[in-house]
Length: 190
Image 1 (cartoon, rainbow, N blue to C red):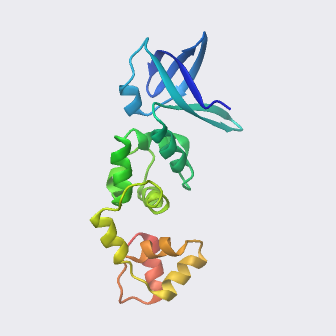
Image 2 (image 1 turned 135 degrees about the vertical axis):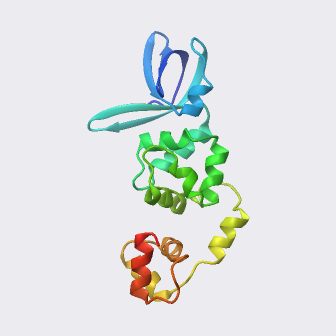
Image 3 (image 1 turned 90 degrees about the vertical axis):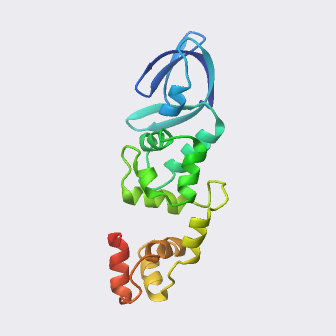
């Protein structure tokens, strides 16, 4: 398993670079943020994530461990593959992306290629407690105002959502609806 590479950046095209390590060229996929910080014919150290599947063996490179850590967290979210994760990391600084997750900024996350509303919501639900930033006032108010309808929550939990996810989905649903209608509205995205 390759965990890091140090070498000369020789070529870049789109978000792919070639790193020459003692005469061996490694192709790395990097975020646009990292790509913009690279200069050709300069030596860099990359932290590497090796993504092996039946049809592919790709190397993803990161200039810092925080980027790699967030990448790994992103690809562990259902519906987020490595190319989508790199696209999300291309949105801006790691701090800005973490802040968007903490503040439930779905619109910001949706600007990444391949990310729709449902995937952005899933990222926020799955990673809000894992990105190591203090929750903003907006996030705290969202969390404190979750609507806890026990029947609707139990219904969503029976569909595979955990209690927090069910609460998130029900937070902006009309409270005057029946439990079944609340579940339907929550699943439709309000």
